Structures are given as C-alpha cells and as structure tokens.
Length: 283
Length: 273
Image 1 (tube, rainbow over the protein chains, first blue to last red):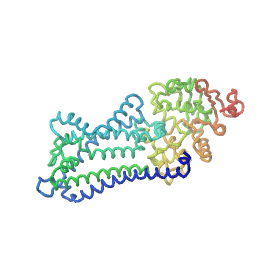
Image 2 (image 1 turned 135 degrees about the vertical axis):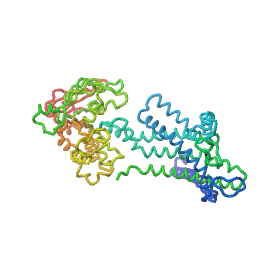
Image 3 (image 1 turned 45 degrees about the vertical axis):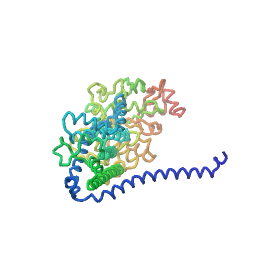
Image 4 (image 1 turned 90 degrees about the vertical axis):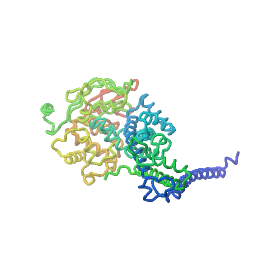
C-alpha cells in the first residue's frame, strides 16, 4: 500500500500511462498511413491520361479508363449536395436559433439516428422510393440516397456552427432595426460560414465513397450515361465490380479508382480544415 | 418633431432628440414579472441614468424601450412606451421601425465579426432598408465615426475587420453603428462596464458630446458614472419575488444630495447593493 502511494511509483505510473496513450495514438496514425501508402503504391500505375478520359474496355483488351465513372460520381454527389445542403443548412439554422419545442427535439433525435443508419438501408429506401416507381436505375435515385446520408451531417454541423455565434451579434443587428431574416442570413450565418462549409464538405467526403447505396440505385454502367435517369457508373461501384473480378487489368483499374477516391476525400478534408482556420481576415 | 423643437427654444437646431415616456409598464419573462408598474418621462436631449443593484430590472426596462425585450423567448411587455406621443406597443407598430428610431449599445462591444469597420458602421443603413437620403455611404460613415470620436483612430484602416480594434474602440464603433441610422434616442446598457478606465472616460466624454442631439438613457451600476454624466437618475430595486420597481426618479443632483426615499439614500450611500 505504501509502495502504491510512493512518489516513485506515482511518477512511474504516470509515465507508463502516457506511453500507452501515445502508442494508441501512433497506431491510429499508422493505420491511416498504411492504407494511404498501400492505395498509392498499388494504384499509381493505373493512373494515366486514358484512365481519366477513356471508357472501360471489354475483358482481354488492355488499356481503357473509367472516365464515365468519374463523371458519374461527380454528377451524383453534386446532385445529392444540391438537394441536401440547402435543406440541411436551413434546418440547422432553425434548430440553432429558433428550435426550442418538441419539434426541434424530435428533429435533433431523428437526425442523430439517421447519422448512424446503415447506408445499405438507405439504398433500399431510395430503391423503393425512386427506382421502383420510375422503373429503372438512375443517377437521380443514387443522388436521393446520398442526399439522405448527407442531410443529418449537414444539419448538425450547421446547428453547431450557428450556435457558436454569440447571441449579442444577432441582438446588435436586431437593435439597428434590421429585420430578423436579414439579421439571421446576412449577419449571424456569415459568422458561422466556415463551420457550415466545413460540415458540407465533410458530408460530401463521407458520401463520395459510399458504394452500398449505389448498388441498387445508380447500378453502374460500362458506357457513358444516357442521362440522369439511366444507369450511371460511379467510382465506388467500379472498385466493387473490378476488385472482385479475376482479371488483373480490371483489378489494376480498381486500385486506380481507390486512389482517386482517397485523394478526393483527402482534398475535401484539407479544404474543410483550411476553411476553418481561415477565419475573418477582412483587409 | 417640429412641434417639440418649437416648444423648446433652447435646443440646437439640428437636434432630433425626442421625448420618450413610459406608462404603467410591466415586463415579464414567461410568467415571472421582472419589472412592475414603471411610469417615467425621459427629457428630450438629456441623459437619464438608471441605477440599482444587479437583478433590479434596469436592463430589462431599457430593453422594453426599443422592443428588444420581446426578442427573448417567452418574454412580453404590458403597458405603454410613448415615443413622441406614439405608443410603440400598439398592434401595427413595426418593431424594426422602432429600433431604427431608438438605437442601442450593449454591455459587451459586439461589432459584426465578418464585416470591416466601414461595413459595421453602415450595416444598419444597408440592411435596415432605410433610404440613405442625400448623403453618400462614405459621408454617413465618416460623420458617424466622427460623432463617435473614432474617426481619427480608424480613418486609415476603414477596410480592416471591426474586431481588430481594441475593446474601447469596438464599443465606440458600435456607437457609430447605432448613430449611422440617425436615431432619436440612444439606449446604452452598461456601455463601459467591460472596458478599462481610460476607455470608460472616452465613452463618458462622448455621451456628454451627444447630449442635446439625442435623448440618452444609460443603465449603469457604477453610481459615480451616473453622478458624473447624467441629468436625471432613476433608482430601481427588486422587491418581493425578484420584481423590480422604480423607487425614485428625479434630477441627478437631487437624487445624490437629497433623495426623498430612505432606500435610495441607503443605496447611494453604499449601505447595500
């Protein structure tokens, strides 16, 4: 007992626990580093001009690219953002500034549940909501699925960002005779701009790599999409289909796609981080 | 306004200060009655101080005067506030119009963080939808900053962020911002309590300069400040159930030398509060 209370043991225990915690931190960093190096080392060989500009070729022919999947992914994510960001931002503003009753509490609870919802379940939802009634797979339906996944992320990050703006800023605007809607959208929300943009970018990064909900919505395609309401190729689908194929050429393309996706997510995270650090510098 | 200027020959010609009057005012937070039965008249162009211990309702009363009280959820007001004879709480009176005519400066300087110094000054003019009249935006911002005694310190950095200024400068920026929409009354809620002594002196000097052109009402729990700056003083005290009342209201000299009420005397001589 005396030994456990002695200063020597206390110092030893302190150092020991710090080392354990540091090791855990290193493990986290190493995992990321290993994944990234692995993807880069396997994927870089696939990257050339054809990869970004050509369509996939049939089995047995070398070369070809995934241009349709890159464009398809951008299309779908862009549409999903157009649907979810305005709705999510306005909902977040409502929760932060006006939401006090049961409605707000329920919306918060549901969006938290939605954040943890398995994405494949959301894919099935979009399938029955859009694909079955329209009768075909489409970029639309994929955008709906991804928008549903993005929505709670955008709502909660916007709410947090707007809530951080001191109330006296809004009061100052109201006290000048500025109407409440202008005080909200032109004074309070711009202060929270960096946080809102960050939330939207992180939501985009989250869904850009989603594959499960695309399986039965976008479906995938070997060709240029014939429009937003026809089956559309997407990077995560190409990875899924090509990586499990027995053909080395296709596996190589899958690694290339994985690298492009990781780079995209990395770039979005970096942009979000820079947006946050780049506070007001009105000069 | 014309009528008042005629009945008050001593006032400067450009003065737009207006009479403000409170009748049987009760202010609530939800069911809690925070301020009860206030009746008072604020002299045009004079400085009136509201003093009293913390929680006596002086800030609440101040916020009732420009309809900022009701911005707080579940807060409401009973009674009348008359600006130039017009009851501000009549249905049909737009609170944004009221707030344009009755400006407010808060306890903590609150410049808009995303805006430059100049944009801060012009925020009300631009966003409150008030037509700028003949003056250009540059003229309005210079005039307002000069009136707030800040022009010389910021004229070379009008496009820097408002938040880059010191605390005292930020508070004068907020005063300039309030003056830019050309109000008739200026409400100040402990405008110097978050500032250092030198900045406090500057704010007090500024109030004396603005005296006459604006009806000024200042909340302070610094009694020396009330004695130094104001023409009239109202003393408030919270009674039963934390409900604030106006105990006594008179000229500042009478309030600080020969108060009628024992409670006023006790407070002013530092026996409590």
